[in-house]
Image: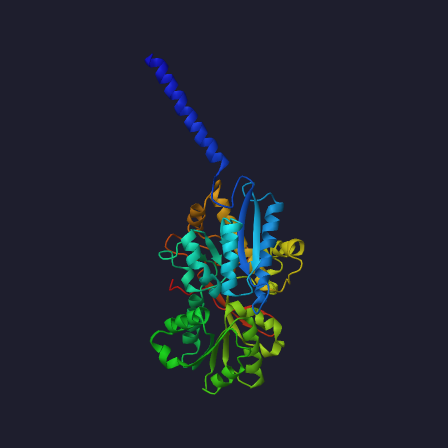
Length: 403
């Protein structure tokens, strides 16, 4: 009797292990994931004053299309739902709620804009929805203690500004610095980073700042006022529409400062007569697709082949298409690492466990790394200068985090 009971117990235990194994093979899922599909969503400004950034959302979708043609991720196809929010935070909230509550997406991926993502940050926290690889460089995306569900991707605005400050201290130690900035978290983060990078010389070197509102039709009066201060260095912290206005006005009034332009608006030089942009400096972390030094490399050729097949409506000269390609590669790596455990908690765990990930269109020497207490995936950049035709890298890869 005892022997029979022992055999029965063993069989029951074995069947339990087998059932557990089958359950694991079938996958552990959160909303928006199953044996055949992974559903992701985001918002993008496909219309409105920041619509040039809609290129990124189209690139995200194009990369997922290629992945699906290759069989998906661990056998699952990506269902990517991208909604237009017109760069309006109330619209972002509305569309994000629909993505989470109606579409039941597993995660929000690469939604664009500082104010837009700020508007939904508490919502995703409350609902424990990953807000991954935000398309924006606000420092607030690296705050795992208070916002464990939100993570940025690109170098933060403060990191970028500290890099400019260190270059100014080294090469222009007597500079008189003026700053044009958008009057929100985007602009203020650059000011914080600039002052931090300049250290105890900040009060002496920064001679003037002028703010503008995103809704302003022009920034010309601010440029004139900044010129009148006698500044010989200018940092323009603006999105492309206002950056274009600033570049034109600086040229038209004959002002010749050493001009630093935020990375997110480096594409603005495409919309200005080339000679008006000569000498502008920015900081980059992605390979410029117009730079001849990359165009014979396998990495560039793969990117161009993807552009032609999956993103043919996009411009091969637009670095935002490199951005979309690269950030989506990062998301794909995270999903691969999740295996069959596609819960929201595991996605955040894997996103916070990236170690020196090399992406083909990142600049040499720049990798992606995260940890449970570090939600800033990219921390290095390299300076580049516009020569009237293309951006030319110079100097070494620099850290904006003090390492």
